[in-house]
Image (cartoon, rainbow, N blue to C red; front, side):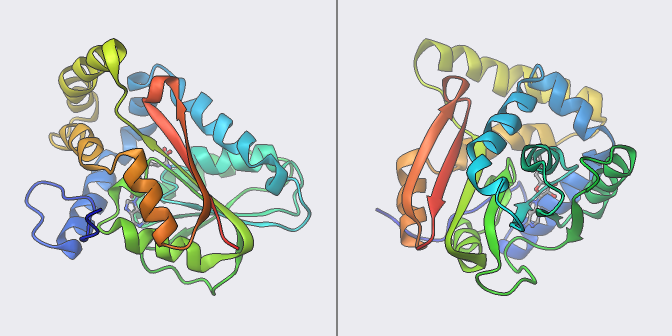
Length: 253
Ligand SMILES: C[S@@+](CC[C@H](N)C(=O)[O-])C[C@H]1O[C@@H](n2cnc3c(N)ncnc32)[C@H](O)[C@@H]1O
């Protein structure tokens, strides 16, 4: 299998730094309408996907004093789903993102809804260079963010580094459904979604980037190989909703 550097490449990006900058600017520009667009464009199925992912890691979330990191947390919906599933305030749950505007919205949402007496903490940081010691977390998740990294292998290595032995990762992201369902979905995803996204966000670009970035993202077999190369064992992919999305899981020994 080819293992050259693979990562997000928004239009006009010349290298990894400019790709990361373009991604950050893109999410910052749509931050005010991000939640509305997510729910409208996914017909609210996004909520189900976050809940299902959080439920998958219930065995970790419900242990006492666990440390959880939700990478590329954006406005925090995956992070809040983890918080709800954890129940106990003793779980330390942290959301990290490199867009200040997205984090501001996450913080505003947590101020409005204290969850079980404990809200997540938020940190502005790049997923490829995180300020945490090795072996620090029991669980690292990322929902619809990993695909935007400028170097997927570097992202996987950074997640593996931060997990303690026995720690797990969960990467939820879009996939490309096959068959008749896939054909229908592609019409929606490539033709309808970019137009509606552009109208509601008032920003041209990000909603054309979305289908392009999914097309560029490695298929499950390749992602699983990349996860194994980064040090994960028991790597698996579970399709959600006909494979429109799916959850990658892996463990560190
Ligand atoms: C599609 S949003 C997903 C937000 C949230 N997890 C959700 O499920 O709604 C992707 C997020 O990833 C963040 N992101 C992309 N690349 C990143 C990086 N290198 N470091 C930190 N955050 C990044 C963006 O700023 C954006 O907020």
